[in-house]
Image (cartoon, rainbow, N blue to C red; front, side, top):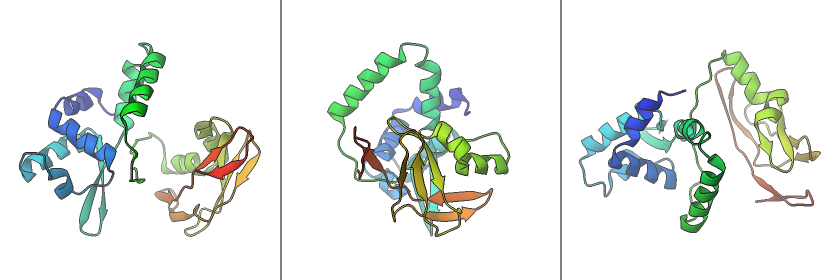
Length: 204
């Protein structure tokens, strides 16, 4: 878990909070895009981003010669767990949901990058990401239960999604393994569905 003091210090500057708000609204922005309308030099924005990266609130991804920046919500979630869970989280969450519903505008960007650190061997992390015995425990649909993925985990392979409590198996051409380097890197597309009260799956 990231040092919460580092995260709090990073969040203490209004310019850095503005950068996080921008990344929350539009994932994967370049430095040039983040500098727009900030009212400060490119060097100053870079320094703020360095602080946010050090606090693990921002993570980056290179695509060719371009460096993209993404919001990493994990440290903020850790703060919420530590400082809100013990102080009437249910009411705070309800008010937050209401605020979001009333104020938020639909997002036109569907790419998200989250970073978290797990103190375990690469083999155990890989097992946690691919073994249904693990995924059905931490990856759950509120109506259909735990999620298990069936595939050989080879690059280019499709995979099926099974919901243990609903007895559903979802197949879709958008469910594809993009990258697979066992114990080092795994990436795949994900097609979301909305489950109706009848249990019928429909594309969302």
